[in-house]
Length: 174
Image (cartoon, rainbow, N blue to C red; front, side):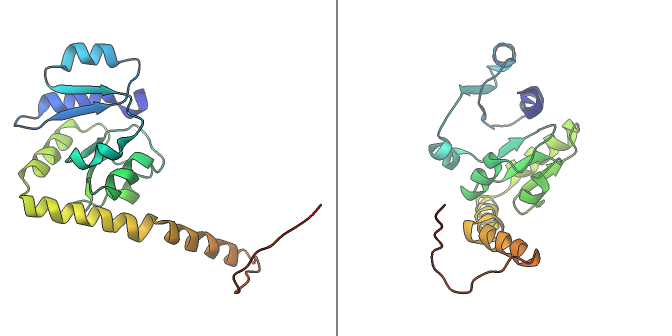
C-alpha cells in the first residue's frame, strides 16, 4: 500500500549502516520492484496473518506512513514490548512518546528517521529493556479493554444516559 510507504522504508534501510536486520511483512504492487532493488539489505516475508510469533523477534517497528488512524499493528507491537519509529501523522502520536515508547519523525524527513534508527541501535540492552517495559505499560494504561470500557461508559454518562449501578442483564421481546 502506498500510504504505508514501503519505498521510504527501503530508502531508510539503505541509508542506515551497521549490523541492523531489516524486514518487511506484507505485500503490494511495489513488492517486486523493491525486492529487486533491496533484497541484499531487506528480508521480504510477504503477508503474515499471525504476527504473534514475530513480535518477540523484532527490535523496532518502523511505520513511515503518509497517514494513519490508530493502527492495530502499533498497538500489537507496543503490547509485545516493541517500540515504534513512526511518521508524526494521525493517531501515531497517541502511541509513541519520544524516548519512552519510540520516536516520531516528520513524514518526509529521511535524515531524522536515520538519526532515530541510530539512536535506537546505540541503546544499551538495559535501556532497550526499559523501553520495552514502558511500551507494555503504555498499552495497559491507555488502551486496555477495561480502560476503553471506562472511557465509553464515561461518554454515555456525560450524554445523560442513565447507567445502572447494579450489574445484571436486560432482556427485550418484540
